[in-house]
Length: 359
Image 1 (tube, rainbow, N blue to C red):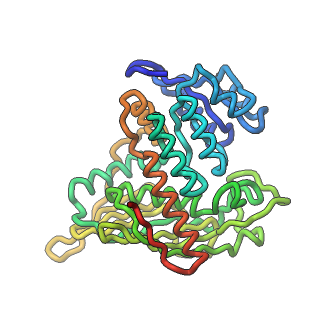
Image 2: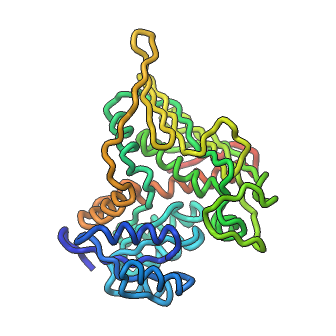
């Protein structure tokens, strides 16, 4: 099916949980740009509840039925990580565009399968990395592109939650369904945003280690997700890594769901260091730092605007469909993130540095 620049994109959503509901809220507010037509979920009563809440006319009995619906142009995939690749590939093969929740896939090989199918079909695939679209992130990106930091050579990023293991015993804490713990859950956000801000250099080597010191003992649980105390926990609850980039810069990453991390806030952070200046982002605040006549000078960075980041994600996705352009958080960017995550897990097992070849 072809669309024009003025046609409304008709959406179906696979996954009626918390993230799926966020997408429904956003799409229902886009007026003539989007039409929310269908939803499905492994637990159909939840899909029916969401349909009633958002005036969605069709509840399909399965993802396969939704993907086959000829009245849909695009599909949002908001399900456990294990199912990202098969559902996205099936949707592409059915002629649908896909807005895919992070991480792109459970591992890099599955992510590459998506890339290959996207290239074969020519349909739009966008990873819903909403942190790129905040007013603060866009302001920092503009400052970097204006040359205010000079050559960037070191980045420190992370998200150190002290008590926040989601849905203990559910898919969140099962490697076969999630692919990992905080590294693939929130670490992917920080990797993606950091690389995006500094111009998307390629990672060339990775050294990392993961730990599970809280989850196996049912400690450090948070409020997100529904726990299943009869379930299992076989993922990490803390990961640390050093990533070397092809432009000579280094990026260090520290993430946790639970940790005795006294001097960290529970907010995401990025500290970017360049030859002419630096930027520190902590939560919803950012600071620029430089030296003037050998004196340290700092100033706050103001967000560009207060537009909802997820609304910008949806609008950018729709615009990419209409124009045939590659979205900023493309399939290849998602694949790059998955390769780094895989390398960290591999390095943790082997104890060795992992080289990444991009030929």
